[in-house]
Image 1 (spheres, one colour):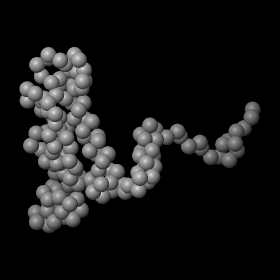
Image 2: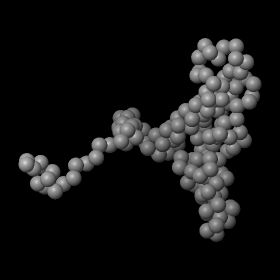
Image 3: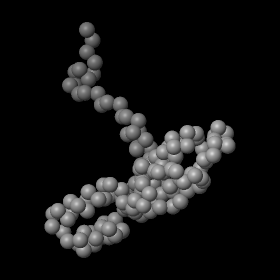
Length: 153
C-alpha cells in the first residue's frame, strides 16, 4: 500500500470552496480592482443588497404574471409589467438602500420581499426592539441608527 503525502504529514486536504465562496471571492477581487470599498454608502455590500432584493422582486412578479419579461406569451394576457417605482428601505447591515420595485398594469402585484408601504426590512425592527429592551431611550436609539446607518427610525 502506498501512503500519500497527506497520510505521512497528517494534514487534511482543504475542502473545495463552495459556489457561494467562489462568487464572493470574485466579487471582492472585482471590488479591489475598481477601488470600491466593501462597506459604506457606495460599497459592494450595499450594491449587492440592492441587486439581490431587485432580483427577488423580479422573480416574484414573474411568478405572479406567469411569464418572463419580454416573453411573447404575455402579449394579450391582460396584465403585464408596467415599469417600476423607486423605494428606499432600511436594512440592518447596509443602511438605506434604494430598490426599484416592479409593478403590473392591473395593480394586483403584492410583493412579499419588500411589501407595499414597508420602509424597513424585518431585521431592522429586531435591532430596534433589542436596543429598546436593553434600556436605550427612543431618542438614543434613533441617534444610534443615524450614526451607524445614516437613517432615522
